[in-house]
Image (tube, rainbow, N blue to C red; front, side, top):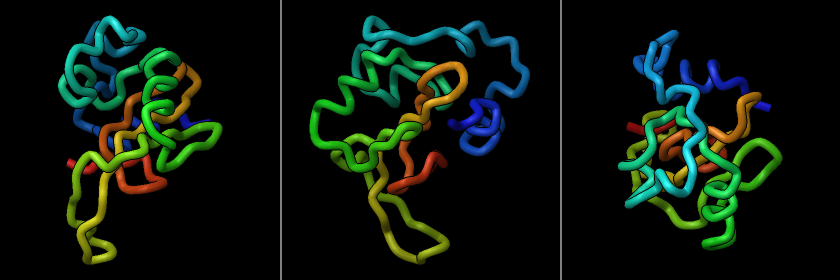
Length: 115
């Protein structure tokens, strides 16, 4: 299981580091999902299990494990500086001690948001 504070440090360290944002610990539900994951949720947002289930059931997931889920269709492509190629990025969720967290768009198998 991933630790939410480690995920936040890793994927979006400038946000939510001991902040006072009231949304930090709010569990976002389907009612909060109006348009698109990137528009409606910030990286590190806690999301309800029904959102993760919806994302898992749209298409067969790209990556699915006990603690990670990546949607079945790429969101975009980004340059991977380590591999020196363009790679697909996937909407990603990680299970933490507080529940599922939206990780943004990450390379396959990763929880690191690609900006």
